[in-house]
Image (tube, rainbow, N blue to C red):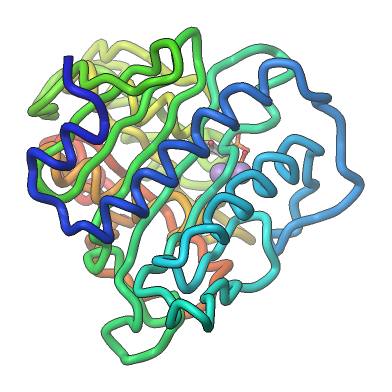
Length: 308
Ligand code: AHG
Ligand code: MN
Ligand code: MN
């Protein structure tokens, strides 16, 4: 069976990018292990999004940070749990040509009730297209690769190096390729986030009604990673998270969540929009930028654009 490394070698991935992806794969194993038994209480602090951090968020972030700092190919990192982007370049080895942004533990509040959670990673070349060593100014389209790790009954990685989408399964310390050519087409499954918006947004309510009337199957877990993972692997469906009222951009973050997910979805033949613009075309103006997102099969994403 092919391993994670075999897959990268076979696809002739740039040797340096290969090194970055290998670090990510290693840290996924550690996070997968640690969340099994770690404390699930609050850390008593808040992140840049003003959200309460759990001890687990900080712990997972620490593992990722430490692993990425060790890798001299990486010059800059940004995390949903860190206040600023962090220069991790090593002067002795001449800096680092990659930037890695990540959500170390998406859906962390679901760990105590034993639902699936995940990690999200986006990899960019640095300096960015504006010549700066920063994520500010990048578009999701500039990502060289993105991946999610899903911690459920099994630990899996879904990866794109812009050559389609593949899945790996963790088995006895090694990730093995279990699925290639992952594709998302039409089909009646929906994961409607932020239904609170229906109280003030008639357009969103009408869209939800459409899916109900057409007898779509509801598959919503409260964790973006398992929800999008399900759409990718079942090959159908739509995940929505609109904004409303005081939060017109919703909750989900462009850099740490939406852009990496959008790259995976487009590479699987699906689409991702904020309602009027392709997610991967959105330029990052601030680290804590949020965006509404409608992501899944092209057919349903187009429907969202039509309704909203
Ligand atoms: P995080 O745990 O990283 O803060 O993000 C959780 C996200 C995402 O996984 C999920 O889709 C969304 O929050 C659900 O949000 P609400 O239930 O708060 O609407
Ligand atoms: Mn998150
Ligand atoms: Mn998180």
